[in-house]
Length: 244
Ligand code: PGA
Image (cartoon, rainbow, N blue to C red):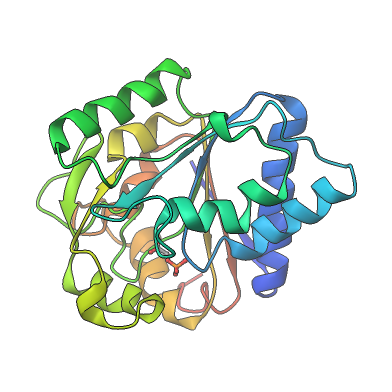
């Protein structure tokens, strides 16, 4: 079941999301958190860092697996998702870095890397809470619109719209990697709970499509309607095109 929670604005969305992540950690100190990158979760991570600083939250036993990583970018590259996670969360809370996992973008052997990362997730017993953003084209992780849903961790060629959207973080569009390793729909849908967050008017059309449109691999996020514990926290702007 997909539950929609309306937030006033980005800040309110971020605090509400952080509250759910925090509750998960309080209820299970060694939770496996599935984490996301992008602009949307930054506020939630800031809030978690603040609560950890105050001593209200303890990451010492938390384990994490990220959704995706660009192929070709080493962990120290400023645009790599590993770098993003260290900068926005891992280096600012008391997490044990050896409990944090991302696909290895430098492994050129895609088959080997996809199997390795899938096995990492399996060996942790799956994901307790998966945090997701949503791309303007409906992607979750880097599961881009396609003719079929890709089950497990795989290598994906990024669509032009994703490369365009992400080019804001690079010096030029040409520098954006053209492929990525991503969890598949299978790993995401196997998470016990899913929290998807969205903010701003630009996300309103895809939020409408995800909620009111059919379940189709052309809108990868639409499959979330088949999960039994999904919460969408979105601000008024992102929900502004919903019919009810
Ligand atoms: P954004 O990206 O948070 O930067 O909008 C979302 C996504 O592409 O999943």
